[in-house]
Structures are given as structure tokens and as C-alpha cells.
Length: 127
Image 1 (spheres, rainbow, N blue to C red):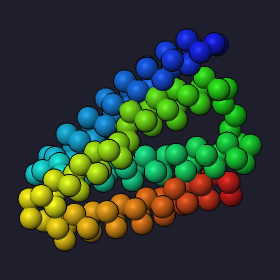
Image 2: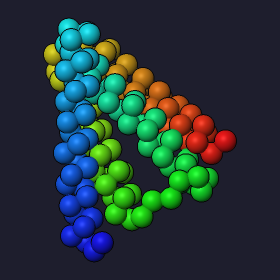
Image 3: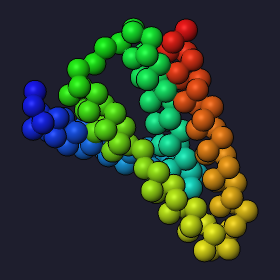
Image 4: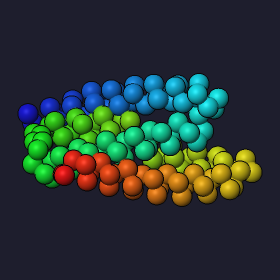
């Protein structure tokens, strides 16, 4: 497929990823009673693990994907699902509402655990 195929793949994947994100947001809000910062944390950590697994499978040769399929999954689905910008806004919101220690904990925990998740996913996929 040409570039229009990739654009369509990203659009459809983005819609699916956004719907999945909304589902996670709703579930987390019900579980914890509030979405900030827990829903974004759940999405970022799940997305980090998923992209690690996929990258590892591709790197190990156990998975091959055409360029349009990669655009659909990586840019579309995962791009629609994970939102680092929301992570930043949640952190700012926490800081602005006098919850500076939770804001800093949010940054440190999501960054550290996200790196562990992407590494673990990658390692599991290439092993």
C-alpha cells in the first residue's frame, strides 16, 4: 500500500487505541475512584510493555510486519493508546493542586517502571 494506505492504517489504529485507552480510563476510575494519575499510569505502563514485546519480537525475527502494519500497530494503536502528553498534564495538575510529592512520585515511578516494562517485554520477546 502507498502512503494513503499507511494514513488509513494509522487512522483506524489510532481510533482503536483511543477506544482502548478510554476503556482503561473508565476501569481505573471505577477501581481507584479517580483517574488522575492512575489511568494514565496504567496506559503508559501497559503501552511500554506492549511496545517492548513487539520490538523484541521484530528484533528477534520471530515477527515480521509490513510497513503499513507497523504504522497501524506502532503509530496507530499504540500512539492512540499511550499518551505521554497526558502524563505530563497529570503531573502538572498534581503540582498545581498542592500535591507536589505525588507529582514527583508520578514522574519517577512511571519513568522507572516504564523502562523496566519495556526492557522486560523486549527481553521476554527476544529470549
